[in-house]
Length: 451
Image 1: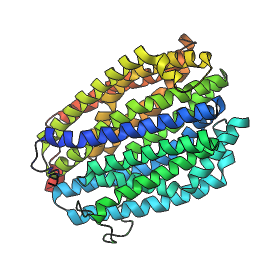
Image 2: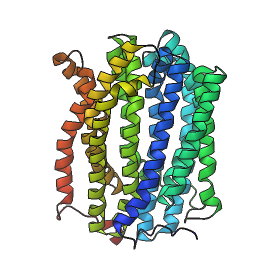
Image 3: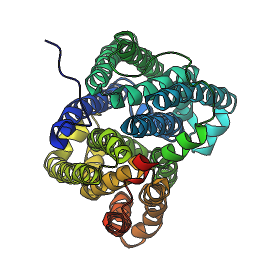
């Protein structure tokens, strides 16, 4: 018997949340595990220079990913709002225009990236063998960036078109394929970082093929056609997607700053940072999964004018996100050495340094969970300015301030506490902005449904 579709209009909020939550978290956990495994294979098959090269590639690739996510999440959030109003044709038009925009932007960025690749690597501070490895990895990834971007956009729309389970299967299928290919290409064939890049590309192709099943089976309301073709809604798409762009691109910016600060300490610190980033991605992706579970429910009910359902979804998401952050802190503090040793062999100094860095870095995650959910609320309800302020504060401005100030007082480990500083300070702003949003006089959630 076919499973009942999600009915955002009539189902209880908790039921809808959990039906979105499990596929979202499962898919994101699997995806984060494959990123970690990817790094483990590089660390063991290529060595410390390979780890450092991936760390150097993060700023560049994070910026490209931010573009794809801005289009996908911005367009799909607007689609959910329109569906909440009952404007299904408008939602279809947003899908078509988002796909077209992703193709045009990704194609242009890929061409520009290939042309200026050496200059970009020099900008992030890559030199010697690390620069060679980074160039090999990014050179391959750029050739397929359009495919990668389309995968992100399709996953956002399929999830919001009441089919989160298929998004999970797509992520899981691609992740499992990536692990298998990593083993073959890196460990068996000896292709190094180039093998990691090819494995990632093929895995993303598998994910996109799985996502196409949604349209072939006509599961939701979206169709692959030219209805609504054009670029007339690009401004709305980019405006709503802007906060997620800043969240992701701030990773690129802060990675550049981290790399600059850590290079002054020695190349081994860059390898430590690579281990920290690729471990932290698991918790980050779980938090993103919680946000993904909340976003379509919030956007739909925002469009429908259901104020109480928006608030109920927010508070459920906040509880899960903060609890996840505390659980991550506990696990890392207990198992930091074991986690670090997964990435390298016969390098006890690197393991010890990474264990210390992990413990300090992860202290930020309970605060991060709260901030991400509040920003997610503002983005899902078309308050992009508020979401952008929070995203820039926690993702870049306060991190840089922390990197410049905290090491002055804590020279040994201060660099790893900069994220805690940024997230803790941002919580104050999040609380003030959330309080204002929840006040009856300013909570204007019914406006879209009445428009």
